Image 1 (cartoon, rainbow, N blue to C red):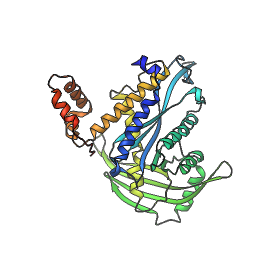
Image 2: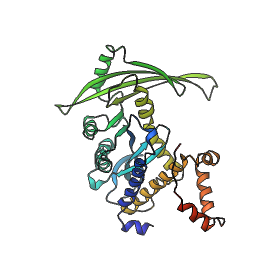
Image 3: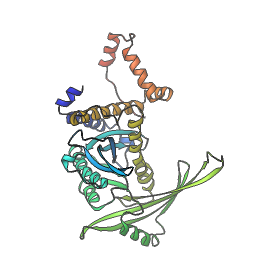
Image 4: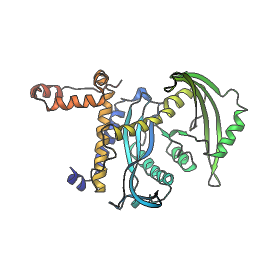
Length: 358
């Protein structure tokens, strides 16, 4: 397999993954999970693996402190884009590898991620020209160029707004929230008491003369849980803030914040699964850059198939009974066992079938 992947155009493997997702979108398999008619796409970057020697000229380089000196490290970093639905289903979509050859050589990891985001946004727009998309981004991305890209592509967005980001926007929010007593909403969601406050139409200026209009929402929530050490019930609290591309109001605050923005964490959970649950995301199957990417794309296809099976109506009971890895073992044992009749299999394959998701 490695010798094959070294020679072929592995981008065709990712193209097959994109075409699989496109066919599901075309067949309206995800319609019930949309946010105001938009497909939520979460984007995040992660390190794939690191070595202490330069094995390919595309590797990124950094210097880390070790003991009394410093150590050179060469690593692979990937920007991932996935459909992140509010029922927990996360479908891999596209990957963009950061590469020294493409100019991703800055010491600032945030700057490199933003450069890769620009390339990924171009690929997404090329592959899904007319698809209504809502991008879900973490606190690295609230800045003028990213907002400009989203508006140019006509993308909806919900972006995490950290306390130290966009100081001028925060100042406007703090001043205007006192004049907006009706921009408040309270509800209970998943056992948590939530208090939302928002300010619309805040003007954000950058690069001296450019302007973007954004909308800011803050959610303060509290809940009770049992402390594992003392066994006592404690009250916990948290605070979340987001930039929204659309004005906030009472009728859309739950959908945009709870069903969309909060599920940006789906991609974090997906990355944890592919790293720790048998997908070998962090394993270097080849020191050939092309083959390494090929293995990565094949893994993403495998992950997609497993997720679709996990959320399939006809298989959900088996997943509940056996678990994800137990189900995969069951399929492997079934396909390699002697009890399948060829005529029976061919008869079933010749019949039309339909994927129905829960």
